Structures are given as structure tokens and as C-alpha cells.
Image 1 (cartoon, rainbow over the protein chains, first blue to last red):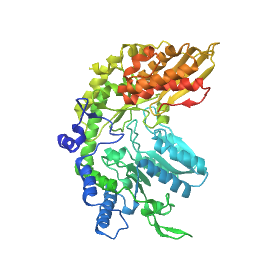
Image 2: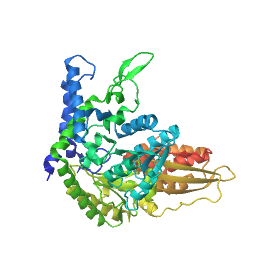
Image 3: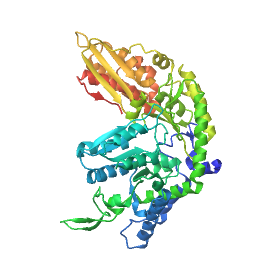
Image 4: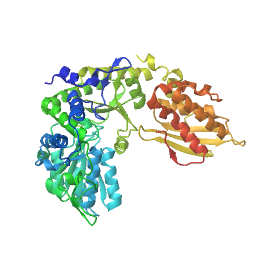
Length: 406
Length: 151
């Protein structure tokens, strides 16, 4: 069990009021709030221990480099990477996927090969592959979902049957439906047909322990700001031999071993993929966020959020006119819904006036919206600090919104 | 519970939202354009029929979106009837000032028909909902067949 009161006390923003009402923050899937240790770590770095890294010969640079590289160790431990050099820092998940689409897509995949994504991807895991398709002659295939909002595994396997698929790039947890994809089975199927697998773990890593080796993944990416860390830092993990075979994405300082006007030699991974001064403060903040999550423990986090999700689904089922979108067996605390007679934007505005923050719109997943036959939905998403009482407030207010519009 | 949102969701807005009066395509028209706010999913299509004098004789629209965007389109149809295209643009400028700031002190335009939307300025994220149908209308009058957005 987690000590919810203590966790909430760690997040200063949760004490804020919105127009005189307590903040009920149910938009963590868009970006999570930050606990005091993350804020303190970043402020401490800027006040006491900051210089550029990997190049200075002075005390400040050495200490800052150490602190930044400790973040790499923390990520490696978090996802059980085999080698700390497999951890590449990027700006966010979008940056990680674009890196992969450029470097693996253009450097390793050959024209005529295919990439498989699913029908429930965020735009960030659609558009980079479309750009690769158009620039490099890659076939882009879309794995369908079932009406329940789960990956259609039989159809997925059929897409791979001709052996031309080089890479599967798929979400590990839908940011709209809350559905987890069966990662181990996806990897087994993909590998049996000669394809590599990248998971977009932006949502999943917030709620579940991720062991990239146990999953059988080849690449895994996530972003810091959804994991209670700062914006501006994300991670691409890849198997060492795959990363070694990939050409650099961006050129610049920090990613070379030597430069002349005739030619340059690349640094070893991860630095080969980390051109330019990185997000130093944010890396230090991410380390603090990972330490915070690890101290609470994923078992406790998963149990808390499973209970919240069950409670929310039960409460929302009793709101007249409310339809939850998707009913996957394996799902987490991201719940999209529509309310008959009230557009999601109007719902969001009325909730906001009661201090309740939800997202409304297409959630950067337009193809999924079309598949589901809706223009937009409202979405409530939970974090470690979410309480059953906040879900009750949501359900009660939705009932009143329904009455307001009818 | 929602007394404080009655400024935006007033009787006119709620009534028109439930039952828009002018939501229909025109069979015969001189200009048309689409408005699309992809971030939030509001979509509107506008058709305009001009009279012999070149003024707007009739306007129709189809919309999928929130209450504010639909009611704005519905009120717009009434507000622009009989106006010259240049006057329509001036009215839009005044309307836009009203929904952004709550007032239009320097405006010579008669905003009475659009007054029910005057509280939109207190809801910054909703201003684009109110202006979307107008962007589409102006694009149609400018002869555009392109898709416009207010995001």
C-alpha cells in the first residue's frame, strides 16, 4: 500500500486552488506533476553544481558530468538494460522515435522493407514513419485493433508473414484507451518473422515496471515529463549491437571522436547519438524522478492505480449517457469517454470551472479517433497522487454536466 | 453548481446548442469553404449565396464540434444576412475583438445578434471555437476552397 497523503505532500502543486476550488488534476497522461525531490535536484544543480559536461577539466564540469551520467545509470537500472551505453538521451519520446526513424530507418532498413505500426499510435509514432516511407521507399503497414481496443494479434502476425517487415514500432500503452499491448507476444511474433521491435513506452513506464530484456524488446523509448520528471529529456534504449550498427542522426559536438575537414570519426554509443550540449539540468531532474518512483516501488504504484482504475470504471458506468471508449482486458489508468448531449470541449470547460483538469480532443491520435468513430473524447488519466475522492468528484460533476445540457 | 458558467452557457447558447436554427447545406450557392481545428476536432463547412446586389442573401453550414462553435455558426448566419462581403469582414473583426477582450469600444458594428457569445473572452481556450465558422465564411467570400483554421 502507498501512503497517499505523504505522496501528495511531496507534490507542491497539488496544494493549489483553481478559482477557489482544490485542484483535481486528472491530466497526468499529458504531463505529470513534479515532486519536491525533482524540483530540489534541479534547483540544487543550478545553484551549486553546474557547468557544461564531458569537456571541462575543472571541478564544476567534472561534478556535473558525474551527476548527469548518474542519470544514465538510473535509467539503465530502471528498465534493466544490459549496458549503460545502451541509454541514449533525447528531448522526449518524439525525439527518440525520430532518431530511430532516421538512423535505423535510413541506415539499416532497405527500400522495399516494411515498418509495422498499430491503429492506436500517438502521432509521434505515425508521422516519423510516414516521412521514412516517403523518403526511403519503406512500406508502412498498420496493424488493426479490435472493437474492444486491443491489438488484433492474428492480423498483426499476418502483416509480418511475407518476411519483409524490418521493424515493428508500437505503443506499449495507448494514451487514449489505456490499453496495454502484449509486449512479450509481439516480440516473439516479430522475431519469428525477422523483425525488430520498438516500444513507445511513454505511458506504460509511468504505471508498470519495465524490463526491456524480459520483454524481448530491441528498442524502447519514453519521456521524462510523464514520469514525474522535467520536460526536455527522453530516452531511447536499444540493444548495443543494433545501436553500434546505426549511423549518427545529428552531427555536432560531443558525438565525434575526431574531426577534420576531410572526415570525422564518430564517438561510441551513446555519445554518437547525443550531438550538442544536452539537457543537463533535466537529466539530473530525471534521475531524481526515477529515484522517487523506485523508492515508492512499481508494485505499490501498479496496485494503487489498478484500484483507482477499477473504481473509476465502476463510478463512470453509473453516469447516465457516459460511454467509456475501449474495454481492453489489460488496461491502466487512462480513460477516454464521451457524454451524450455534451461535446468533450464543453465537458472539459465545465469540469475546469470545478477545478477538475481533464484533456479533451483527439489526443494526438486522429487515426484512432476515426477508427473509433468519434471526433474527440474527454480523457481522465491518473498518477501516483490521484485519490479515489478525486474520481468521485469527477463522476459526480459529470452527472451534473449531463443534467446541465439536457 | 454551474452558476459561474452561465455567462458562457447562457439560455441562448444552451437553446441553440440543442436546436440550431440554420444548420443546413445550401443547394445553390456561390461560395463555400471548410474550417477545421484539428487539435480539438471542431469542423465546419459554410455555404454562401449572394444576391443580385452582391450582398449575402443566405448562409448555411454543417458543423461537428462543441456547443460554442455550433452556436457561433448559427448566430453568424443571422448576423451576416444582407451584408456586403466587406461589411462581413468588418463585422468579423469586431466580433473577434469582442470574443478576445469582451468589448469592442471602437467598433461601429452592431454586435447585438452576437452578444450571447460575449463571455467567450473569459475562456481563453474557447476563443478559437467561436471564431472558426467566421474564418470559414471569410475564406468562402475570398473565393477560397482551402481549409482554414483558427488554431
